[in-house]
Amino acid sequence: MSRSHAKKIATINQSKTDRIILFVNKIMLSLIVIVVLVPLLYVLVGSFLQPNILITQGLSLNPDHWTISGYVRIFQDGSIIRGFFNSMLYAGGFTLVSIVFSVLAGYALSVDNLVGKKAVMIFFIFTMFFNGGLVPTYLLVRELGLINTPWAIILPGSVTVWNIILARTYFKALPNELKEAARIDGASDFMIFLKILLPLAKPIIFVLALFAFIGQWNAYFNAMIYLDDRSLYPLQLVLREILIQNEVQPGMIADQLARAEMQRIAEMIKYSSIVVASLPLLIMYPFFQKYFEKGVMVGSLK
Amino acid sequence: MDNTVGSLARKKSKTKTTSSRRKILNIKKNWVLYLFLLPAILTVFIFNYLPMYGVIIAFKDFSPIQGIMGSKWVGFSHFTKFMQSPNFLQIFSNTVKLSAYELLIGFPVPIILALMLNQVRRARVKKNIQLIIYAPNFISVVVIGGMLFMFLSPTGPLNALLTLFLDRPISFMSEPEYFRTIFVASGVWQVAGFSSIIYVAALSNSDPQLHDAAVIDGASLLQRIWHIDIQVLKPVMAVLFILAIGGIMAIGFEKAYLLQTDRNLPASEIIDTYVYKRGLQAADWSFGAAIGLFLSVINLMLLVTANQIVKKLKGESLY
Image (cartoon, rainbow over all chains, first blue to last red; front, side, top):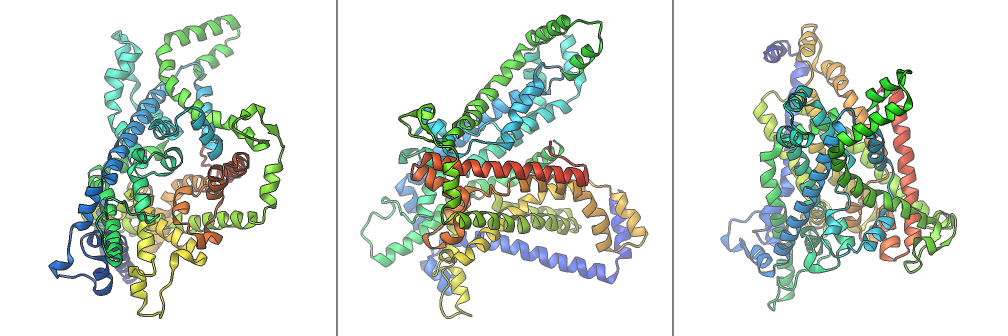
């Protein structure tokens, strides 16, 4: 109420300079929105419209210039689809491990009178400040025999201090009376956690899971160093071959084509694979937007 | 734990044995909680602490056959070799410059964006702008790299546009002079919107009466932004600044490696990518581990120093 009140006063009291600033602000924000949107739309259009037409004459309304052959070739080849399912497995497994382990630990550390709590916290927090680095970590993963297995992607880095601290903060903020009442009724610690606290923690669990899943879905580095077997490649590694290393998958351009034609199709395949790889998250994320905001806020409370 | 043990210690009449018996009772009663801690402790021990032990290969000539213990000690020779190598200065300054630019541009932009968004009166419009500018954050770094290569290629759309002013196309990705600009600008394009969330949230949680009072007192818009909004954001800025400084040398391998081409290496080779190439690709394990350790130690010092400074200035601390 007082906010709208303030706005009313503000509009009355607006000086000329204030109005100019607000106007410039609107223009600038519109420009920012355009700068963000144009590259995305360009890729989307480029996946349907032959790229050379797009560059030389811009948007074309001639239906002959529009084609879905980029998409057809992607789905004919199969490496992107296989990458998609591998990524599902890795991101899903990583998220599951990450959430289960951090939430359990976060809950234990939220209990007030746990002996040794401080030592365990220091044990976790120390990893924020120092790490062994790339080479020793790689040698360890190799020593454990995890190279060329999904575990090399799922396990390292799955438990992070941040997730544990966020979960702990959340459990700590839940009213103590809840636990006390249940304890008086004779419920065990485990039952209190499972039946009362866990359902209440759903929002934080969802936020942490979302961040873990997206982070792993979009990562390529661990997969690049730990996986040689192409059938295990996640989506991002397949994309890297197509987009960065310019290696068009043989199944996509199997037929005999003129060189110029081949290059044109390779361009289209790039655009369509970007769309295929990015669209799922871009379509889904608006539904989760409020959770991201919530997650960031929980993070800032600490 | 702190409370019970503390109060027990204060009661001098209680002997040590009762307090330790209490502890044992507490541990027995809470065994489920220790069970809950176990998976996280094990994972962190294996994947975070064991590599720290592995760091000693930085001081040895590690060969996989002889193992970590069996390999010969060589002291600091890998470190001196790295620091005396002809490309050390270039790689080091590339890392510092890239990080500094990213911090210099990447840190203030989300704050400015949040202040701008805060002036949008209609909630729906604000929500829609946010929806759009957050989107690039959800695109993978591989896709960002791919888009940059396509957009900036000599036959790509940007050069098609530039032919209006220039007579020959610029090969952006193979000129070292453009690398840092491309890296930082694409980073801002991708994450600045999403990074503004935390500031937007802080602003919308601030007390509206402050603005009411200021308006009545005749404060102009800019005065209110400076004296109210910026003050509200200061604590958040402090914490995020510590984090940014602590991670300043860790600009991330992923994007730099993707954007590297043979010809832009004079600007794009940073410590992280060098560790990967020497340590893993060339299997020069000990040398790679030494450079990695060098980087970790710098990061540690930066994080601790930054935290001390902000603590002194603002009373805000990360730990």
